Structures are given as structure tokens and as C-alpha cells.
Image 1 (cartoon, rainbow, N blue to C red):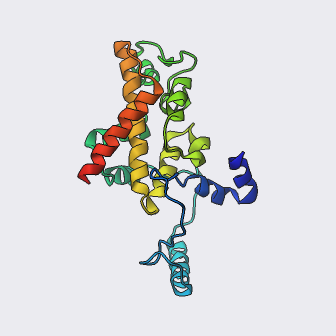
Image 2: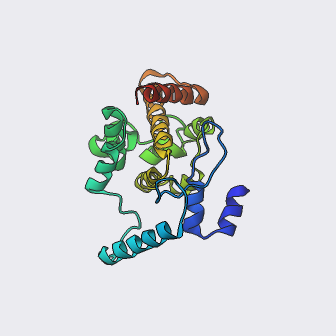
Image 3: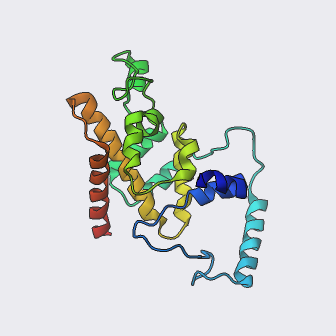
Length: 224
């Protein structure tokens, strides 16, 4: 598999960053772009000043304490979510996902003891945020129809905060904001489809779920 070949060729950090690069929706060819210069071209001078800046930042950082590798929490995560050009309902949806307060079956069952914690889709496992948005077999079928894939995030699907934190790292790259916004649209439509299935007995096939997200995304692009 191509993914295995990338991990065999590069160190893990570089491999994950490579796999996080989304495929162009317009079918454009890849090209090299140095984001630390105005014209996108690398020069020895721009490389030197970037290295000096990295050295300065590393000296200013406080020593790392023990704990989870993902530190995307609190005000930082809300600041990142709020900076996105998306509707407020999507921002609050993402916030609930990161704070584990999305009203899924497991959360409701543990808080008020009503219903069952099992997934209303597959009925095979308890419904956590990660199961609902990534791991349920019905959700996986939806993602298969998505024209945009983040292969480098697959191993983080069991922890939404880690997954979303890694996704937001891509915002530093040129034109990545469109891909991030589209990915959030996918998440929102997956959640809506889950809610329709649970409360109204309706189920939309994976292709149509993705199509709805694509239409919303295209409409948003028209007003940017």
C-alpha cells in the first residue's frame, strides 16, 4: 500500500504530515511552495531567517511536562474553531465534540440514565463521539464517498481532540482552509444523518450525505 511505503521511506512525523496533505479537488498537479517567502520560492536567505526564528521560539518555550501528546485544549481550541469561516452552529457543534458534550447515546445514558448507550446505526458498540463520526460501519461507508481524504489522520480516529488538532495544523498550508471547511461539512452532515435516523427513522445513503455537504460547501464558497 502507498501509505505503508510512505511510512517506510520517511520518519513517522514527516509521513503523517505528508498523508495530511489533501488531494486537490480541482485536479491540479502538485507543486512546491515555500510558505516562508512572499513568492513561494525558497532562498538561502529565507531558510536562514526561518531557522533563526525556530531557534528563538524553541528557547522561549517552557519545558514540556509529562502528559498526553495532544495539548489542543481549552482556550486554544476555541480560538481555532472561532477563527474558521463557518456558521456558528458548526462552531458550537465542533466545540461540543471536543468537550465530549455532544448529545450522543453514551453521554445521555451516563448523565440521566435514559435510553441505551449503544449506537443507533450499527447497534454493535457504545456510541461515543469518535464512533459516531468515524468508526461506525455506517459512517465509514459515508466517508468512502468523500472526494477528500486525510489518510494521515486515520490512526487518530479514536480520539476526536487529537484528530481535530492534527486537522487544524493543516491550516498553515496554502489553500488548506477550503479543505478543512469541507471536512467539517462532512462531519456535520454525518451527525445530522445520525440524528434523522435515531429520531425520525430516516436513513440517507452515504453518497447523498456527502453530496449535501458538498452543496453546502459550494454555497459557502460563493459568498467568500
